[in-house]
Image 1 (cartoon, one colour):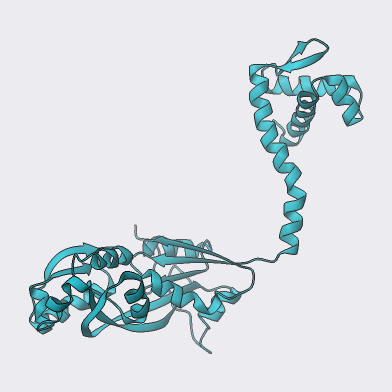
Image 2: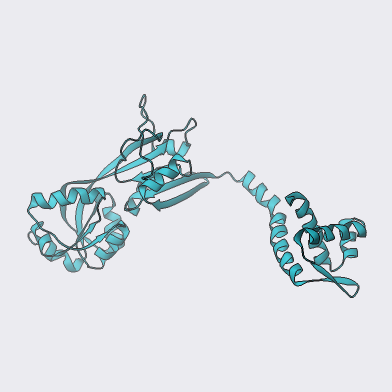
Length: 306
């Protein structure tokens, strides 16, 4: 079925149904009655159902016609809005930035990493959170402009991606006020007595914290492990346990969650990396966030696992 031909027939049917008769529709369209009638009959033939039935001096909709009318209303109401929408899009420039965030990356850190472009006029920001392999696949297919992760992916010859370390934050321990005194008493050995919340492996922070416990000679009393960093902080703020977090977001952490700093986690840092695709014409906002090093060669990152 030809879409151009059928949409024209559908439009004539729509006008007939709204006017309540073929004669009135023909007068509105400036066409002969026979022409309008033939167009509607052709639509009925293509759809395989009668859409109109005689009703007095006009016509009425059959059950099939009522459904066709509902769909036609949607189609042509959208069509009436199209010129205005196009004019609005042409006169209002939009700078789109599509960012993927690795699951487990602290949400408050994401805001800090993107802050250099958040004041861009007419910015349209889209942020999605997925497993890193899925994000890298979408980045390679140009469905995303940038990916933020807490660990650099291993090189992969199949994808032209560039990785840049944006910053490294020290890590500290935090607790709800009810746990603060017990956690600070003989810290860090106190972490063997008080409940402890940790990120799940293979989070970069967890990979470093396990050896930190060994060096401190502490066997932690782990009561919860979380993939999502926001959930980890939420449960920690409710007093379920002492938890680690990046110092970069300490001010927001204390203000938003009402927790207190327990002590340092010396030697444990959380890195934050940006990954972008190598393009002949780089995205201007990505170039602002991840400026290429002069003379640097592209670093390749892994695609999705099989």
